[in-house]
Image (tube, rainbow, N blue to C red; front, side):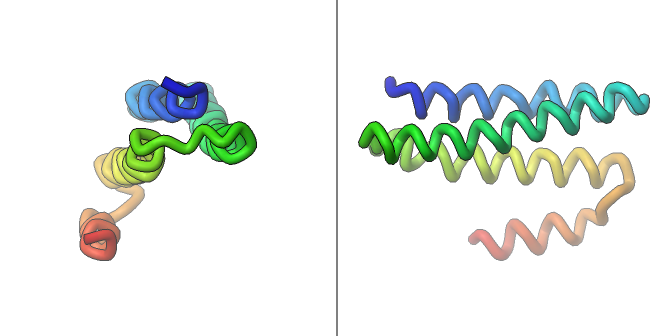
Length: 99
């Protein structure tokens, strides 16, 4: 397994942590959730850069990277909608768009 694929899998593991922090509903945990999300976004940039620079493009990586991106986005949208920030219909629009 390449380093960029490992980073992608690590990014997938940030979603449960972000959701846990968001549902604590304190200012400090919300801020921490935003920081973890920022770290996840930066890791997406880094793993893409490493995959291109080191020519580590693999079939697994080319499947996992967009899959993890969608899981992270949909997970956050669902979490925010459960907290009342988004309507569930907005999430359905995103899902339909990606079909």
